[in-house]
Length: 365
Image (tube, rainbow, N blue to C red):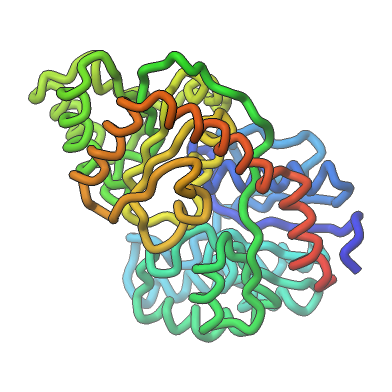
């Protein structure tokens, strides 16, 4: 059918963290509701709190189900936990009677199939991680191989991921994330911005090395890093040891409305080693920021072009330092890339992306 007024249930884990996946889940639930669908956001974790605002018309159900993915217990007790949680999910899905179930993580997609979700609904997975980023143990890899071919579709965020998921399902489709609005930045800024979890996969170790080189060569500039995570103490120690106080500035993410940070920056830098479709790049481009990133296996290359930013070889800190310096030294190039960035985000507007959901997924209903 593909028309409005379907009941869509989105299965997700915790939403109280300030991440790109959390933002995409909430934004998409809100978008679907405003387009006339009945939306149930099913949070299968310990809290129903959300860092991002959920539309009052979206129904929120919360039930803590781990499906045995927990450090507690042993191999046997975790399998018993998986079975018990699958049975709880089965009862929940029967109660919901949704037309479409969208599972935002692979354990949730697998559990929805094991719970018999396809008896009353179409079931699709929504893949936010790079195919090879999540390391599954042998048991979960077997579950993945058993359940994923039975999904009605796999929603991928770019064509590279679509090709990878084609090996496990007959219907991988591409629907990127969207950005709400265009909010041009201050063209006189001398601030480099990065928003990221302080973890190894976000390339924080590389960021520190590059920041030292860039800020030493360009003492009038500052680099603002907004994030939190396991490497926070390491980042703070590096700032102190390298005497970068007031130059490399670490700030925690305190509010969902972070657009003002983009508007006060001159460029955006991403040092991630793995990405699928990073929301921060879309947000940065919506402020007209040139973006520089490592060309990891998937993700940034589907947003950044040579007209609106720069991609450098993954983990090549010398190339990344040179790219940032090039933009610092060339205001004309920054302004040109700013214009192209603002043009590019129109490809990822809510209406454009919603139309893809209609064409690629809702036609299953």
